[in-house]
Amino acid sequence: MKIKKIALIGLGYVGLPLAIEFGKKFKVVGYDISEDRINLLRKFDDPNLEISKKEFSESSYLSFSSIIDDIKDCNIFIVTVPTPIDNHKRPDLTALKKSSETVGSVLKKDDIVIYESTVFPGATEEFCVPILEKKSGLKFNSDFYCGYSPERINPGDKKHRLIDIKKVTAGSTPEIALEVDKLYKEIIVAGTHMTESIKIAEAAKVIENTQRDLNIALVNELALIFKKMNIDSEAVLKAAGTKWNFLPFRPGLVGGHCIGVDPYYLTYKANEIGYYPEVILAGRRLNDNMGSYIANQVTKLMINKNIKIAEANILIMGLTFKENCPDHRNTKVVDIIKELKSFSCSVDVYDPWVNKQQVNDEYLIETIDKPIKNKYDAIVLAVAHNDFKLMSEDQIRSYGKQKHILYDVKYLLKDIESDGRL
Image 1 (cartoon, one colour):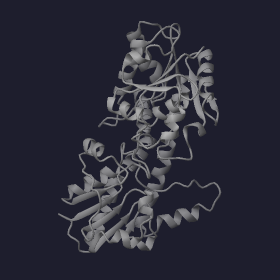
Image 2 (cartoon, rainbow, N blue to C red; image 1 turned 45 degrees about the vertical axis):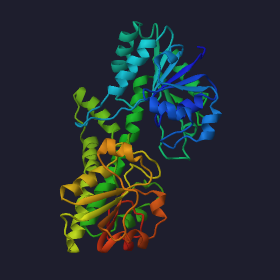
Image 3 (cartoon, rainbow, N blue to C red; image 1 turned 60 degrees about the vertical axis):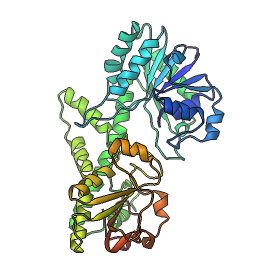
Image 4 (cartoon, rainbow, N blue to C red; image 1 turned 90 degrees about the vertical axis):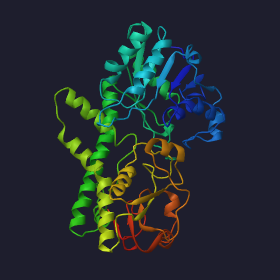
């Protein structure tokens, strides 16, 4: 198949890096429904701080648009829209549905639609393809074809970039699988792994993060046990880590767009086919409860110091789901904040990385520009930003009242420097 032009549908953490790399070799239209985002990208401004102006300038065949007509002459469509969960922990495929309708409206004979969004096994062919057929009037695997290549983007990671991570690929026919694999080999330095079917590639993606979720759930549970035994969890993990095959996971909050979401896509599909997954959901429940556990630990420490809980001023340092990036999607720091507010505490949230307006729109949280000295009854180090790592214990404690609690979620300080940690 001759590549005429590629359309990248969705220009977030996944779509933009792909558009940049493909735009170095092929004609590419980066399409997004947000005109504001398109206007920023045309100015080489990435609000997610993943792409530099130099990288924009190197992608000489790339253009940006929010107009559907601008992607009509493309023959490869790569869909990279978000696939979150709803309030009931069920897959929310709204964006996937709308983007499939958009692509279907301009789909032509022999076009290929490649999905990168994380889904449950079977979603591409069972959910997306019927939408494409209905909107286009074309027949799957006769008039048009599909591929799947799950995203492996790690926000904020400047070492493991898109081109440095091996890419899993799949196609709806053996011939299309080869075409899709060949396409990604054009930009992925680390190489590709072509699977036998789209379902295998979909399943591979969801178990990557399900495995990490369960490993973190295990160390979280160990931390809860060791806390009751008055044993330092970090010291135990360091000791166990001296064995060559011990996995170096650490306890903490499990949020974000992948690890805290993907397992629910797998369990949803498992329930649909009549299997109730016990281990996966047990791990999810434990990890989902860590924010509440941390808030309760903080209040217990405050009680032990005779600090009044109601109307106490508490500082949360960090809101993003991981360090050194502005990504606040599905951050579990919000759970700590909600729990503390339920105790009638007054909570200030400080994070120099976040977009204040986006956080306010999504979580109704107004972050502060700078913590106030000598104001807080408790300080919670929630995210391991470099900004906080560079601060000494005294600098952090200067925000607290003479009598206060310093709780370290991320092991930024030595054990003796904090009043409590996981």
